[in-house]
Image 1 (cartoon, rainbow, N blue to C red):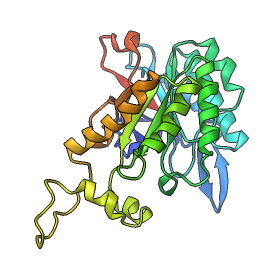
Image 2 (spheres, rainbow, N blue to C red):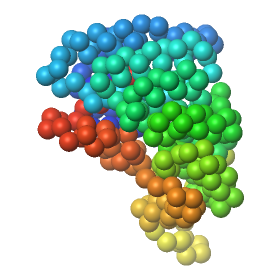
Image 3 (cartoon, rainbow, N blue to C red):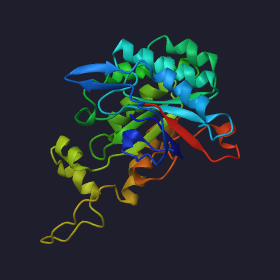
Amino acid sequence: MDTVLVSGTADPLAGGSLPCAARLPEPVPAAWRDGRLEVDENLPERLRAALTNLGADEGRPAGIVLAPTKGVDPLGADAYLQSVTFLTASAALEAGLGVALLTRGVAAKGFVPLFRRYPGRAVAHVALTIAELDGAGAASIEARLEGLARLADAGVATWLRLDPAVPDRGDGPDTLERWVVGAAAAGATGVVVSPLVLTAEARQALGDDPGVVDYFRPGRRPRRGTPPPQPALHLPLEREAALVWRVRKVAEDVGLAVRLCRCARRTVASCGLAPVERWSARRRAQRRLFAG
């Protein structure tokens, strides 16, 4: 993912856009080439250089976000990739920045002492969804919950992220009990709900499931013989609210907060990746540094 300075936040997992304010030089940490993962080991040094060039009074970002892109997860199974992620996070924390992680992977044990050294400066969203929409090579759900417990034990505010949250397929009581109760037992701070965006790729992955697609059709059910309206890209607001309510019903029973991520609708900083209060109180405009 390109490393950019942006105003506000955007959510790569939810397909949010990044309103770029300034680009750093070639900040791509890893990429797949000819079926082989090539990792950019210079990313930590580039981050340090970029922060040095900005200076203290030139709108330095409040934090970095390390997020999946182009099939590469910052906490993927590759040890070399995790090493670069570790060193990048370390560079940010040493510079006084916060670190946010969005991942479908599992953090190595070495991250624990790093985050313990900087309490309150890191947040993590551990994402999961139904198998049809989970990324290729993602860790198992059980492994992700174990990784969530590891980060929570290190003092990281760690959220279970339902991304995407799929109506009719991923919001049933049994599924939510398994995921949400498991996250609560692992020490999660709360649950972030990122509703499915019904792109052509999502419809294809779901086999154009009418049970899901019908949720995205606006208005009431049409009368018999009347063609149904075309499904929208986003859930109608009342159905989005109902989806969140179903999650909240389970989460509140185990003491977890619930947040709705609306970054895909260009609603900025809605999912908890905004800086913590002591950062957001600064008078200068909020800026985020994406280094995914």
